[in-house]
Length: 287
Image (cartoon, rainbow, N blue to C red; front, top):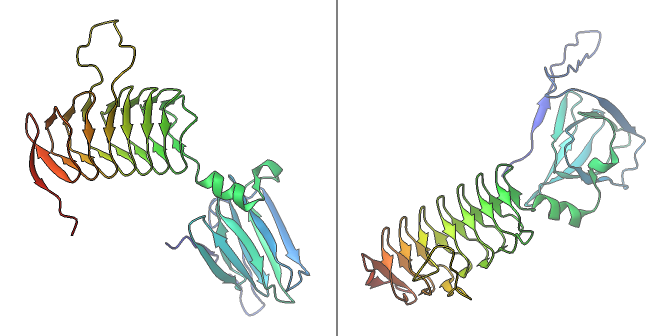
């Protein structure tokens, strides 16, 4: 992944010397609200060591050079800034450090907003925690605070207060997750799925679009059992689109439920089941 972006400004100079012009929203892709410069920096004393939440910046070395380390939380890249008309774009949520200033270095930085200390993230662990925070779409209704890092919850999803969702999950649009639900890490839930009380999805489970879960074998309006039966989808299992899972079922590790299948009894590990009612077609080889 290359997240390094350069902004090169034409040099309008002639035989009299160089001329470089910065224009907001023209050759600079934002309003310039602040600029600052760094000079007399010590070659062995690095600077920076922070990220910004919203600020955009462009750094030019109008004289000399320095090395910039850029870190997006996944990988790090180092580049030299050493051309007076070629600036490095520093977008929000990029940890950056400046090293190895030349003795004659003068760094000019253009910024998209005024100084605001609250926009700074100055501790690296806080930076990684912030960039890996769950994404919750503003058009979703999420009450739970027990949602793991890197999980994405898309629009028109409803998640109740006591639901537990692990890390790096993808909860697609138009889903509902009730209170007594446990979802592991790296789980994918496609659109049109409702996860009712009593359902457990272990790590790396895939739930296809419009899969139907149930949690009451004899439902009546306004009548509720003392406890809903547990339906457990074990690690690595996949359930195809429009399948129906009856209450109290256990689907074994790495099993696959075919699209449209109606599962009325437990499915063993590594089995592929299809049909209505679902029957074993074959087993997945571990070789």
